[in-house]
Amino acid sequence: MAYKITDECISCGACAGGCPVEAISEGDEHYVIDADACIDCGACAGGCPVEAIVAE
Image: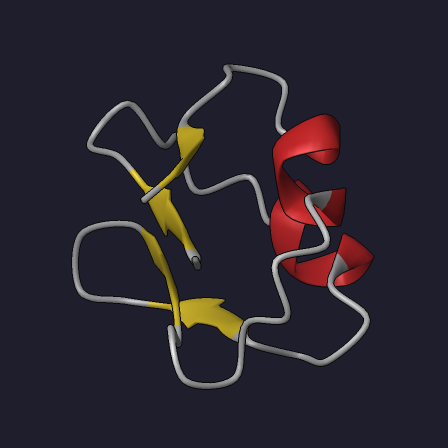
């Protein structure tokens, strides 16, 4: 199960810096997670200041 970044994302980049496999990148409207690269560790969710990352 991968994580997903919702529309509540404020594009601060905190999640990208905390991802150990670099599965997060800046998308057109907000940051996005590459589901194929995500290892389901939850580091991104713990670092999000607006709780915009949820388990998919």
